[in-house]
Length: 171
Image 1 (cartoon, rainbow, N blue to C red):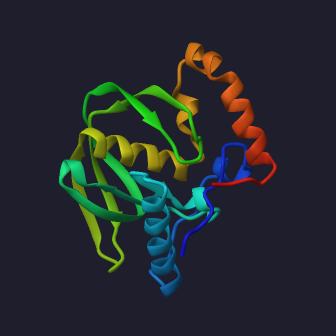
Image 2: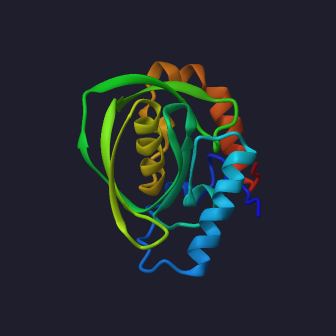
């Protein structure tokens, strides 16, 4: 089932998400819905808070780097590689992009839908997506990582999206 994607300005996007204590049918349904929603909007990743559910879960799919769909529950990032500047966008910020500093590779530990704890080392766009989605689980948005100059250039767009989000509009 498609879910609404919240827009910048909705207060749920600023909340730290809660840990998931058990892999229930509801958690599995949420993950499936999030994948469907992410694919519908041509995204690479989607965090539960973006669909209004403040839980520590995100989904992603970066096939161009050989990674199939991934569901990460209660994820944490371990090792981080060197930092690099990367262009980024977000489904909660339609029409807004910017360059942010992210680790070029990371090790992520997470629980999968079977309840097993996993560890995976990822690089490139996949590492970027992991860090972006993990930020969402902590109430941090990619615009928080933009330079002051870029925020100034985007001020009108950000203001418009924020107003839509505060009114409860969504994608």
